[in-house]
Amino acid sequence: MNKSFKKYVSIFMRGWIGSVLIALLIATSFKSAIADWYVVPTGSMKPTILEGDRIFANKLAYDLRVPYTTLHIASWDDPKRGDIVVFNSPTDGIRLVKRVVGIPGDTVAMSNNQLSINGEALRYNSLDPGSLEPSTLSSDAIQKIYTEDLTGRKHKTMVMPYQPSIRSFAPVTVPDGHYFMMGDNRDNSADSRYFGFVDRKEILGRATAIVISLDLQHYYQPRWPRFFTKLE
Image (cartoon, rainbow, N blue to C red):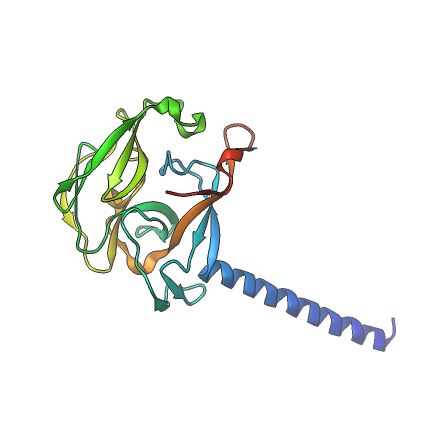
């Protein structure tokens, strides 16, 4: 191999590696600051989100951040009650997906799994579990499904009466710049009942849709009806 050929190979390799690195930087920056998708490994948001769902998170829903950081360049909105958000856990930094039930200034309380916001008890309507797709339910537990009216934002919740859980707590007021999060699977969710309020800067984006869904209990078979469905 002559020197000229080695020189051209060296130039090509440097250019190719540089292009790959730039492409990776752009792709990871996009995921960090603009949009991303997450695999949900647990059932803490059932019946809304199932194990094996891949959810889309809009990271521009509330603000623009410096990629790879929690530093905000600009903010144009804040999470609302009922929003499903992705955030860093206050205890260990793990990415979590929960629903916002309390915004700054709200007083939140719970009595036997019935939420109250600012002294007003939320309304619940019972649903027949048989009306839901089988994968929504847990095979090893008794579940009750309700529609919860979160001050105008209606969504489904699940309770499992025989699962140890915090079902009641005294009124707490959400401080400025923080949020109270809960899972829709109220008796099987590690949320603000356990780790406290979530700082606004740790909220990464709003989960808006299920992109694809794979049934982890049945050899990752696609759950076609859940593909590209909006999250409520």
